[in-house]
Image 1 (spheres, one colour):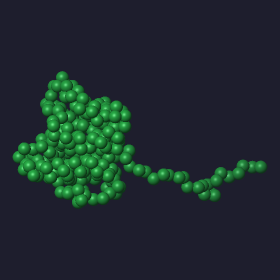
Image 2 (image 1 turned 120 degrees about the horizontal axis):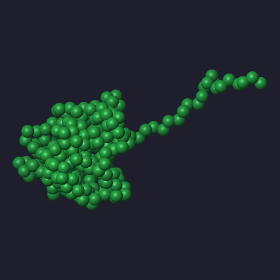
Image 3 (image 1 turned 180 degrees about the horizontal axis):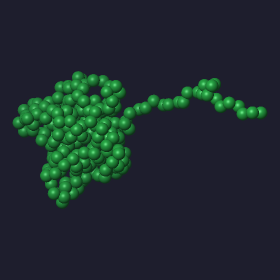
Image 4 (image 1 turned 90 degrees about the vertical axis):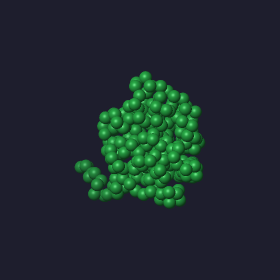
Length: 249
């Protein structure tokens, strides 16, 4: 079973490099339907979470930008998929996809069902999807809707096609004992989709205390750079002038 709760082994330098990388995130485009999303060859990382779970705050904290991800004053009203490029401007290395929050009671049922279908289709078939970051409120754990969302992508997680990172958000609102219990309960849920092939991570996360921010940034960078297909490099043949001169006979 591949389920980790420990920080990546990179150390302080790796964390600084990862945060510098996530800081490059910039808005690319928005879409209200899957067929409006651009075709590309970059690895895509999706951010999903229940309304009020702190998804926009987590994205902005990871990018160290206050207003990169738009947080609607009315939860559940942001009903678009927003894409962000990450990496050098000339050669982007990944796209982040901010999916609409789910589960807010004030949203009309028809709208809820439509976006549930859009997100399910995205998670099940989006070709470039390399990883999913699911925000779960640490105070409440996996709700029925969180489990349903997880079920959409579970087949691709189980076989290792798509990686999964669960951020237990708002961890600063729990004491140490409550944090440990929240982590234990989430591990039990994720154990149901963990296999030898899967790559699943989980960490307590607090935008206020910056708990788990560096760890999450490292994981996202590893996902993106690890998913990139780099061209084979064959050293060019040596020029005649580069050949060592023959020694005296």
